[in-house]
Amino acid sequence: MAFDGLFIHSLLHDLTPTLVDSRLSKIYQPFNQDLILIFRKNRRNYQLLISANAQYPRTYLTKQTIANPDKAPIFVMVLRKYLEGSVLQSIEQVGLDRIINFHFSNRNELGDQVKLILSVELMGRHSNVILYNKQDNHIIDLLKRINPDENRARILLPKAKYELPPLKPGINGLNISENDFKNLSHDIDASTLVQKLDGLDRDDRNELLGYLEDDYSFSSFKTFFNQFDNPRAFVLKTPRNKRKIFCYLPYHLDLEKESSDPDLNMGLDDFYEYQANRDWVKQRASQVERVVKNEQKKLSKKIKKFEKQLNLAENSEGYRIKGEILNAHLPQIKPGVNKISLPNYYDNNAPIEIKLNPALSPARNAQKYFTRYKKLRDSIKHINEQIKIAQDNLRYFDSIQTAIDNADPQDIDQITDELINQGYIHKQKKTRRRKKVTERNLNEFKLSSGKHVLVGKNNYQNDWLTLKKANKSDYWFHVKNMPGSHVILRDNQPSEKDIKEAAEIAAFFSKGKNSAHVQVDYVQDKRVKKPNGAKPGFVIYTGQNSIEVTPEEEEIMPKKIEK
Image (cartoon, rainbow, N blue to C red; front, side, top):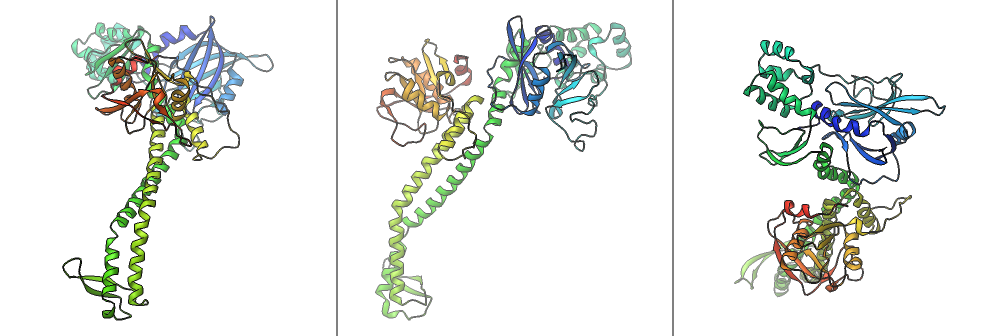
């Protein structure tokens, strides 16, 4: 079930009493399509997320910690000017459409009271957030400005008059009386009636049709719609393991119940947390990922080139053989020829064809083969060194990609700083102050024994955790021979079960998180060292033991301690 009209109707049941009469205290835009509005009421703060993301537009109260960017976009500056300090007077849905209007009351520079509307349109790729004056309907500003040639239905620019988008007329099922239902059901079948209703997505229509096929009556119809006035959050899975969230529990769809929550906002926050995090990380990490992928591509090409050269060098014996055969038959070679066939005494005197430079003497041609052979043999050591350097660098960028995959949005700045310091990203003229790594940056888990595990999510955090935070007697975990997080088990005498659970966490936060069998090394932290001049995150260790585990997200993530 998506954010359709009926879902929004249910959501406003919780949202309206919570937010109406509150004061809007802060506004910021952490990501391109997302806004955070912080309301203050009864000495409590409520954080409202509004997302105009094309794939999953949504709005709900969130408890996630989302960093406020250093620089505010223009739209946020406008919102702050007109709405900060204003009182939210009401929240209204336009019919059963995916449009929510937040009505604010504020005073302008002259002290006159003004009525403003923040219209949130949750309509897929056409989603937008629009601020306009209620008195004259003129748009003050909007999140996505649309040129007239891109949208001829209405003008979406500042100073234009706000108009509703083209809406398909339908029947509001919440307002249908028993008399209305009898008249409709007399003329049309259940399938046609369902299609005429407004505010339902495909899942809602199929579920309602199931109700009406069981019993085509007003009682059955009303039972379905009454659920939207008493919403809860239900997360269900399709046969292909796709997760969906509903504000009621469907019985007629092929879905398996995963979880439920009496608080719809809380359920939405939990449901979208992972996907929103991935989307926010993707937005913040676009520059970093571009650098990483370019470097990985260049290094992979370089390694292939070096391996080709190494293969040529290791198979260079033929040049020496040709040189020796030429030397043995110098009197038979006439000057000026460009090739000659001679008996190869290394292969039972079978004829071997040797190319010659007609401008050189036979002896100089032989010497040229010896020189080529020596140059290739001498290059083997250098090529091997270059291959090792390229492979080490490729592993480094694999570790950066793994860090991005494990990152929360606020971790991306540290990864960017690392690549700036390593010279892979140009330093901007105006640089932000680098934030110190603290324990709050790390992921923290509580094992079934009650012991705590700390997890670094990028190379800076890994270095800080292993070399500064951990006690020397704590146990250090890392996947074997692949990029992954440094993991510290805060105990000096862990049980076998502690070791297994900590190893599963290390495997989950690594490149092998989707593998069935992951080898994890573990050793006391005092045996882990960082070589001088090594890149961030790189360490060496001795005396380790290993354990093979299978990381299961369902077992690992419930152990995470939320901060």
